[in-house]
Image 1 (cartoon, rainbow, N blue to C red):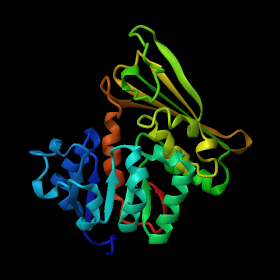
Image 2 (image 1 turned 30 degrees about the horizontal axis):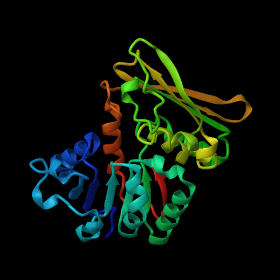
Image 3 (image 1 turned 180 degrees about the vertical axis):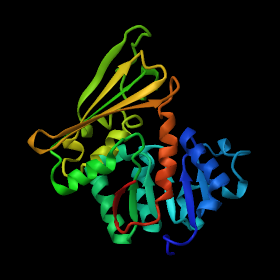
Image 4 (image 1 turned 120 degrees about the horizontal axis):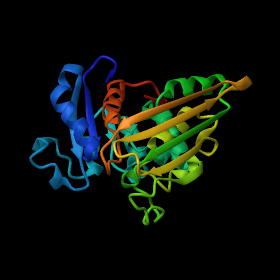
Length: 278
């Protein structure tokens, strides 16, 4: 199928807050934009009943190929990327909503090879990353010397694999939870640092090991997530951006990120066998 001119069938894997947002947008506005919802899968299919047309509910993800989708969007969990990423790319373009999974160098390389082999595009949405295309241009031109990202959130917004935040109190203020390579950070906070992972993809020559990240718990941030990015080039050149993303207490994903994902989906019409930051 020529995905540059034809209607795209989109499969959505995951029906949390972000997945529901994308499904609702596809059902409401997709037709006018050349997008058709092909299927929705969720680990608990009962959550879909009454919200998604029955004929669009996919109960067994292993049978996704029968729905003949052009683009598959994962907004679920890094484990889905590990288990199904290669299979998705053998059938469709694949938008990775959990790019923290790409911090695994073996998986990263296999997905890139599958993309090239099948002529599919592995899309990485920029999400809450501001200036991703500029970072990518600096990387491609060889002028990106260093990249640092700090993400600050209310402690209730973090989903960490360890017990680093088990003892937080409402009045404690600011606490640095981790500072180091994004490669080491992704396993600690796989659901919280997808913005950093997207930056590591954009800064491909530095990679997950070379890009530095910091996550900060701050009880004063009751209404926002804050993402700071500092890109360093030659001869003292640097750019420092600060993005405040409105977010409710306990929300993993900031409000503005939802529309960012939707805008990323709109351009997933095939860019050859490659990785593409969108």
